[in-house]
Image (cartoon, rainbow, N blue to C red; front, top):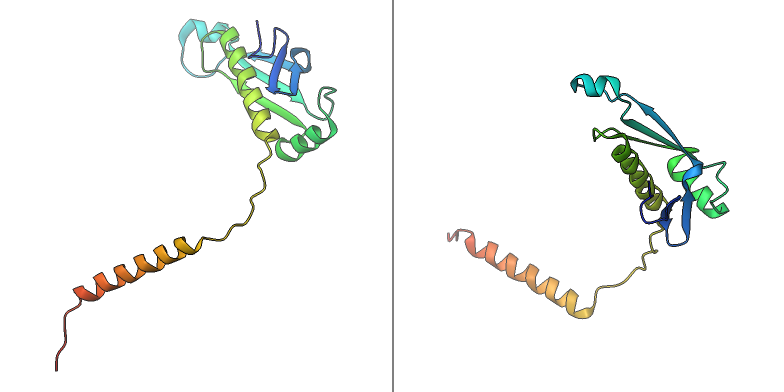
Length: 142
């Protein structure tokens, strides 16, 4: 089995981080719900666990960020498919997506001011709306 775009024995998380499959712990159990004989006798549900605190693949900043966002252990469950292999691939893919999302750092927002033209357009639109509403009012002449 190959991991999603990380080589045959690695899971690619970001361009600079990939986790070896040997660091992931898999547990297989029967899927819940209806399904007849196949579901009752085959262990197709996959539970993937990854120990963030003990992983040698993570750098100190990555580890700190993951511990803050996801906790000491990441757990992913997949039981969508009837095949154990496909559920395993789904679990690994979801694990990679969850890790990448947790490691993503948003660029800090720089405060900006509206331009002079933008202010004028906003005020002009307010004046037009005000005039339109005023023209709808009935005239009260005494």
